[in-house]
Length: 264
Length: 279
Image (cartoon, rainbow over all chains, first blue to last red; front, side, top):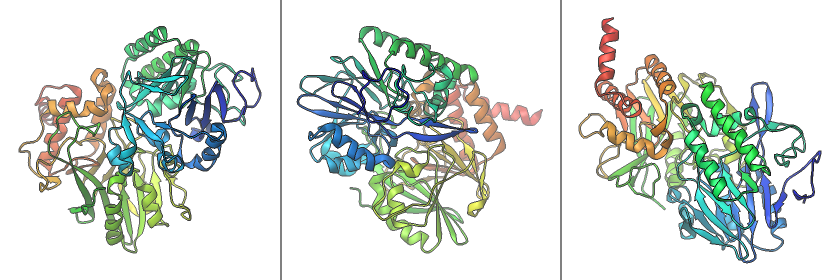
């Protein structure tokens, strides 16, 4: 498995990938038609392994389950998943909960779990609600649940690993890139061309359709404030590659949101 | 798991509604805090000749009842499943339905193929989902009187199918506010008595569409008007909440929503219509 540290300007990067110590990136990339073009769109999840416990953040898409099952096992190296944290209840983020609950029979689902009596009635005894400010103790690291400043469904949460300065942002910071073999695993600084505001447009128009109708200035200001108050070196989005230059890409994302509004 | 049978209602000659009542609960993210009564969860079946169209598949909680109802109501007809959104209240039983109806054809206007979003049993190999553009009819599937409209106000990609014959608009996660006060209240409303105020509607809408609070609704209003200038529904049929049925009631409900969303003064819409007609 290729790590981020060892892959400066690679020509091909496959997933899964080690993003930081005990932090692994998996994806079920979706090919989507965009006019005459075929784009790849990330549907990622992240495994965070501490000395005492491991948590899977989002689950990626069901069509990728047979491969993901093997990849999770390999990354865990004999450990088990203790917590499953779907950032919000949509299939790209929680669609593999059912097989994960079977595969890891001691795992507990954590998050804003409203509606789970409708979606996973068989698993209510394995659900634990958490709220903004709650902290998951993984041993030598923690995961703090923080507000999902950018979201589609209001019942969304983000997570922050303070020790490793990693922010898990679910639907925020989305960008797509042309379908080229090997690019899906590249970080924001490894792609052959810099990320542009228009690269965020496809996913913003689909997953964050509200951006057309809202001046996102307040939201972006909250995002900048969060980054100022909580040091972040790595941003892990579900619908974009891992970001290793957060402030630069936050500015790109900000312009992407502004462009969506202007296009309206 | 909820074991109550689906409540089957006939909305029109060829449209059946399967509904399942659940007590209103703060555990449901889209309900206003303190909501009381019972919330209908609805799926719709439209039958034409030897074909049956299922609009959405509901939440997993109602999977067993849905399958039992479909076995009885679909029989040997060809099953077509149209998915309006890829959220869990629309695709919650898609895998289960495909396991039981292995030749079923899934159709959607959403860019994300819904079959890749659900698990099916080993041995089930679903047919590839067919993507159709917004604005298409379902003629190639035997339902030429159904047109797929893009929802004017949406979160993810969302379709509002319009059944021209019965003038029913299937509104998926919109027009969902109306709950049943008691467990034996019909899931179809025909009169305006006791309906929610625009303020209640807005409170409920913001539970899911929280961005509407600060939205510039100019474009939304154009999209809304473009749709409702084109169609004149006799029924509004959502995925959750009671169906609104009858010309006068539907007009009132649409106007209430306009007040709630666009913050119009009540009665303004009616005045505009009168002025337009007079002009």
